[in-house]
Image 1 (cartoon, rainbow, N blue to C red):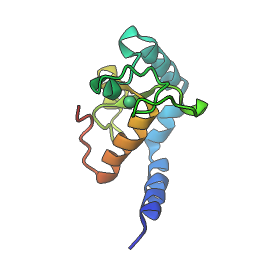
Image 2: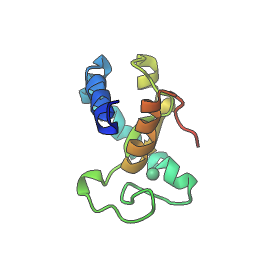
Image 3: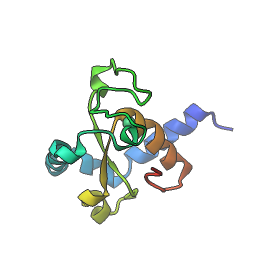
Length: 121
Ligand SMILES: [Zn+2]
């Protein structure tokens, strides 16, 4: 039986080999992402907001202040997992702002479970 850590490493390796990983490194994505997060509609993590916390990327999901400067920002999440589908990847209607906590913990857990369910909010 592989340990949870081993499974996680295997998952990360596999994910890094996906051709769509490089889409995140393109200037097109960087620009589109910045524009999306600059929109007044997208100033707060949607999942924190559902919990009554207005989080512009400075809080952890439990509402305490984030102290790691590298995590003090919002992440653009794909509501419906794109699985390499370019239409879904670039469709802004399929994007939502999340804090790093919600992005890491919830979304990646969903990916690992292979549910592909996107947002459950
Ligand atoms: Zn959040």
